[in-house]
Length: 233
Image (tube, rainbow, N blue to C red):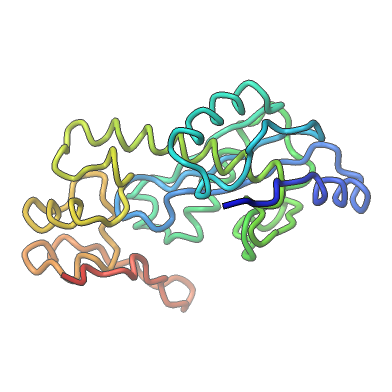
């Protein structure tokens, strides 16, 4: 399906309105997975013409996404990945885990960005970062699209490596997201050390429900409810 290529419109706007010259695009992958980390990529691209075909990683075929990731690693000015582990997700909740992963990525960059373009409508970074959120930024903004592809391909590789010792779960194919193979393995074998144990999928597994972790309320606020997608056998 044809799609409009991403542009530097947001970057140019930020430069004009804030004076920022070093701008990072930020995107995440793994938010809805049942296993594995949530991964955030921060990419600095400048205003150069991007590789042909760049767009949101979800719109690309596996073959093209893999090829493009190689091109992007050589093309971007710099990029860095940050991860929050399943244990950190269980302890902190997804919003705080996303912030943790994003800060890890941003602080690993060789130059601290003066502004950040964050995919989506919710600013999970907050102060002291200067953030502009962009809905579907991974389709419209060059730096965010680059971050989208880099994050997706590299997290998928991580999940394939984790799956070597847990072949029944199909992590190389499902990247820790719910799938028939993943659900069947969970029902038979229970969660691996790479699973998020505070999520609702465990409610549908009576034999493993005792492993579920419940986060404490913090400052009087109710904990987030993660893993809303149940088994639906």
